[in-house]
Length: 189
Picture 1 (cartoon, rainbow, N blue to C red):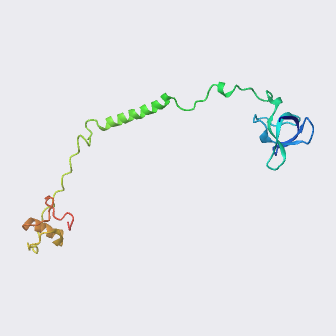
Picture 2 (cartoon, rainbow, N blue to C red; picture 1 turned 180 degrees about the vertical axis):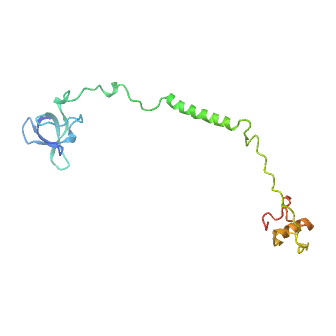
Picture 3 (cartoon, rainbow, N blue to C red; picture 1 turned 90 degrees about the vertical axis):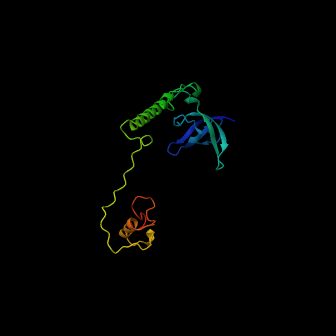
């Protein structure tokens, strides 16, 4: 049931006050949260319409206040939300989204074209020639203390010079698996 009254006391710092009902009786507690959220501060002597409920502390307090004097005082009337025109932009339009995509695609096309111009090597169509194998060192006369004694594998050699001697001078050696003229690529050489 709605009751009408007048705001008799108000503590603006603490956000509460008391309403005196027009029908008489004890004053009713009111908190700032019960007032309409219209940006106008409560004023002593203001006429109010409210409902009474029991708060969490067991005291009666005013709830769902209406302020009949505030209909046009201190604020401008605004049309209902449904009739307001939308003036703010919520996001980019389809053109605003398409333009950066086209720009990125154009840069990608230009970059691809620049990389595949004639005169520049293209790894897929014109692979670079493989590097020539390093020339073998100038042969020096091998020391006379090496002689073919039946050893055939790199694991049996004690130095690179010995492996080179065996590869050049001894039959049936198995020290040059890729036939590049360099013995024991993974061993002593």
